[in-house]
Amino acid sequence: MAYFRPEIERMQGYVPGEQPQGGKFIKLNTNENPYPASPAVKQAIGAVLERGLARYPDPLGGAFRRRAGEVLGVDPDWILCGNGSDDILTIVTRALVGEHEWLRLPYPSYILYKTLGQLQGASAEEVAFERDWSLSEKFAAPRADLKLAFLPNPNSPSGTILRPERILELAERLPCPLLVDEAYADFAEWNCLSLVARSEKIMVSRTLSKSYALAGLRFGFLVAQPQLIREFVKVKDSYNVDALAIAGATAAIDDQAWLAANRAQILKTRGRLAEGMRRLGFATVESQANFVWNPHPEVPLRPLYEQLKANGILVRYMDYSGWGDGLRISVGTDDQIDACLTLLKTMI
Ligand SMILES: *Cc1c(COP(=O)(O)O)cnc(C)c1O
Image (cartoon, rainbow, N blue to C red):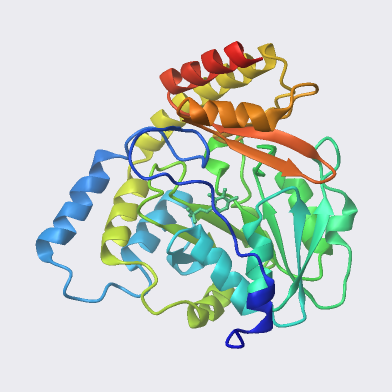
């Protein structure tokens, strides 16, 4: 076909984790929350449906910006709403990175960043994490036409986290803005939100998909200084968040008691999962997210993934060149984790 831009024909396209429809799997492969969202979400969405969907939604999701601003201690005009945080990453990339320019990301991390660069006709430079999952100065090195750096913190697949002071150092040296992807920050001991006021170059993205149990709703947001937000608004779809999502997300972020209780439960189960995996001989990495990364020094892991799947348990198998492979297992309910550990025990 001669219809497509060459960069589109050349690229692989991002492949998300398996999303089998229907309930036959214990799903521990895409870091969804195993518990139902705050009941306030259903109520808020119901109220919108009652009023009807004939009108366009608020283009900027003002209700969410105001409530999230209060909860997070930032001004509403520092917040940009997105159709999932993937939409936020897309908007930021489209706004900052042009054809033949560069973006930077750590390796191994979230593969989507690279795909977003390819869509722009740009190139991606991957800077390898150190063996202890720290990040060297190379991540901040100058480079011609480097327009954007991505840093997931906590990182996926490792679940490890860098300290805010380290991230500020790297950002100050970088010749371009740094997007800190905090998809998992609600499960961590600290986050980088307060850095946004200290440096125009630091932006923080969040999602309601994981910690608020709303992956199906599609809602994420960016926190950045308002002079940046104003430029990103020019790039986004006019109505990138729908009326149901705005109402549901606003109710979710309003219910901080639900978040705290859910987080406490997930962290408890995460500890049990990590301990159980280590007992099976995995070199499980200490996690600050709602999943754990499990390499194994001896056992081949792809067959384990296949066998788990054949027995109705879906985890993520990943193989990173230069790094080896591992199983990334999401923190499910205690029962789900017990089922997974029990099955693994029979296989190893
Ligand atoms: C899940 C995830 C996202 C995307 O979240 P959505 O809001 O569902 O689009 C972004 N970044 C990382 C690192 C993730 O793991």
